[in-house]
Length: 511
Ligand code: ME8
Image (spheres, rainbow, N blue to C red):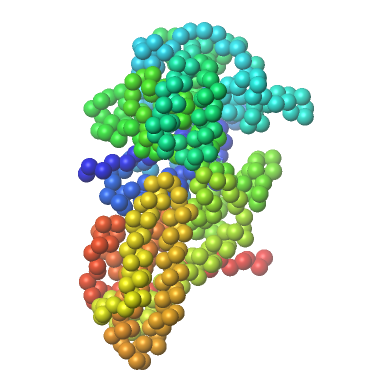
């Protein structure tokens, strides 16, 4: 296979339990990965956990566990979350693995050999919660008089010997990268922010710490562990087998898309390409960042007690329903809020009514009036041709929307066709044709079945289980469910199993 696609999620810190924000990133990335597989690509989809650094060390101490034992537990929980959310990752990396330690040591050596690392002293502000350094000018003072990072995280003054990365040397190369590859950073707002940050001047970056030990040792520098972001970012090449050029997965590097939340765009769009340039490695093609979820308009936080556990949400509303909601409710790059009424409305109006009823009505009519077999088509009317054309355009439309991570636009394109198909069935009234024109009824039902097949095919990445069931009911064999197969009509007379509803309505629990 010649077409390749490598996509990643961030690797999640194991300092706390997974929540809906993590699940969202992973599901969006999963939709991309599944879509590319459907479109004939050889896909490598990477996710995992970020396990070193002071933040994790502290959380482990609070839990009364050794850092690794703690990381084992939380990493397994993140993995379980990914599995329960239908995240079809190809590799699950943990930064405490041997392969990653080897890879980080080699990355360090290459950057050092190219003259981009020097020993100095770090003195400045550090926020453990963000695992990030801040300049004095970026800080604010909280009501209690303590200094805060722009993210609100408390900062502390740190003074220790440290290795530095010559980030300042990469200002021009980075600006050139953003200019030459305008879609290196999506969306445009994120790109503008990053560009003005880089134009403002880059300081050299402290990349080792000596005041704690929970990290990857710096080669030949006793007492120093690597800055957790250098360690973490490097996971993306470790998983491709770096530094072994013969590793089977090395062919996937550079990555096509790193999916990240907007909180960590700077690390991915500034530090990461600079590290790679310094090491002489190819750069990823894109960093695509998404906006923030709040809960009924409020920031999710432990103190407010409104943190949403993705697995609980799935138990209440259903997996595909939650996946659909997350990708439909807000534009990828923008912010959005999760609420019960919004979920119920998407589920009952768009899934149960618009799509579920369309399928159920069409398939029931076929079951009752065509002996449960796919009818053949007669001569096409203008209306038939219009609906065929709309359905036929879906793969290309989705390809274009998803190539820029515009998931909600892609879904809107599908719903335009669903609405057109609902108008078509109402207007054509195949239930009435049964008494007047059996051949025409067959044609109408076949047009609907073919439209539903196209819809269900392109929706598979979003709602894999439900769409598999819909394709079963439409008589589409397993090997005919990718985008290319849509060009080949199913044989007339294909036997269809008895129809069963795919999307139940959400009914409020009176209690
Ligand atoms: O930053 N809405 O890990 P992390 C949407 N280990 N997405 C959210 C969210 C919200 N409210 N809250 C979190 C790290 N996220 C580093 C990454 S990568 C080399 C290292 C998502 O556990 C979003 O994707 O803090 C964000 O970027 C990520 O969780 C941060 O996860």
